[in-house]
Amino acid sequence: MSNIEVNGAKILLELPFGISITETQVNMWLVMAAIAAVCAWLTHGLKVRPTSKRQIIAEYIVKTAENFVTGNMGARWKWFTPYIAALFSLAMFSSLISLLGMYPPTSDLNTTMGWALMTFVLITFYKIKTNGPLGYAKSLTEPIFIMTPMNILGEIATPISMAFRMFGNVASGTVVSLLVYAALAAANNALFGWLPGILGEMAGKLPILQLGVPAILSLYFDVFSGVLQAFIFCMLTMLYIASAAETSD
Image (cartoon, helix red, strand yellow):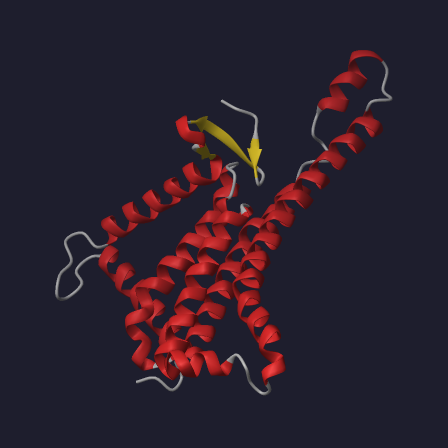
């Protein structure tokens, strides 16, 4: 196993032609496999009328996702629910995987940038569909032609800001948690290491000060912040796409 890192993720396997398998890729596939397995279990043996708690849970999740999409984009966007549900579940569980001590894929800018670029492609597609290619090109020159470079930069800034928002929050949370944990370890050793002989050595190694505080930080950064960032990312995706297609039928 290599100790080389790419964007913070370790390279687990190096293949020919410069191809590398990183923690991000492996953990993302694990998240996708877990989500697929849960979906297969929830939707197995569905009936016209629900007869099991499993089907009731599945229908509740689908209904909640549909209400989430139609409430923000309108009823005609109900068909967009699978994409938003997949994006939200991937983003959320890719952050929550850190609770298992695994590297969260959302701490890798490649992951969030890939999702942001998909959203950018959809935004651009619906802008062109709404206004036509010439209308879209003309919109980049408004209100005056001299603003064209700024308008182009504004278009490019959309996926960049979305990617860095999620990446920055998840990655910074991981860094802060590690720094606090290390600081508590040093404080624990300084506070109890003064005891004489083996007693001080053992007391300095016991994680007394590390109990509780890292768990609270993890609760915020891994759970609350991870779910919140997934929610914000999906909200921005829906609002940008609906706004781009607001006049298309």
